[in-house]
Structures are given as C-alpha cells and as structure tokens.
Image (cartoon, rainbow, N blue to C red):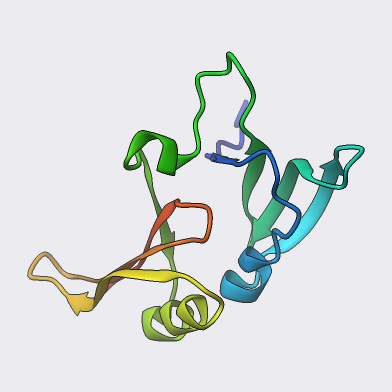
Length: 129
C-alpha cells in the first residue's frame, strides 16, 4: 500500500502575535485555518503553499520549541523550491523579510537566496538550475 509522505514544519511564534499575513503577502500562502486565543493572538495556524503545508504555533511553556530570537539563531532553515527565485525572493523582501544572503547561482547547480521572516525563521528560496 502506497502512502503519501510530506514534511509539515511547525514554526514557533511569540505569545503576542496577531498578524500572520506575512506568509500570504510573501509566498502566496493560503491560510487553511487559524485558532486564536481569547485576546485574538494566534495560538496555531495552518498554511499551504502550492500543496506544501506548514504550521505556526505560539511558544508554549515546557514544549521545547522556541522563538528563534530567544535562542540567538535557528536550528532549521526552510527551503522553498520555486521556478522563479528572484520573483519570490523580491516579493518576500517587499513583504518585510530581512535579506540574509542575496540570490546567487552556486557552483553545485542551485540558484538561491536566504531570508529571515518577521518571526525570525530562515527561508532559502531556491531552484535547481
């Protein structure tokens, strides 16, 4: 029996986040659903980018998952494969992403640029040449 396998990253966000529209503006992500706390801050949300799902979840005590800024870095960089690296990269920067590395063609055959989203998560926008 064949199964469908997919990675669905869970990105940790701060406790007082109300606006998660960056992902829609930057990557064209579609918000599938969002559970909010009584004060309208985000508890957990699910997004889809062309069939690739990911979640946002507020930092919870004892979970072992942390907002990147609390750790002075990240332990995972999300690679977003796309046909037009420059267009997606530039759109993300216009939406508020911070440039980490500009788009470059690398000797191993990939075009990629690295960004940081407003919540501190790192994204590599990339394509195999």
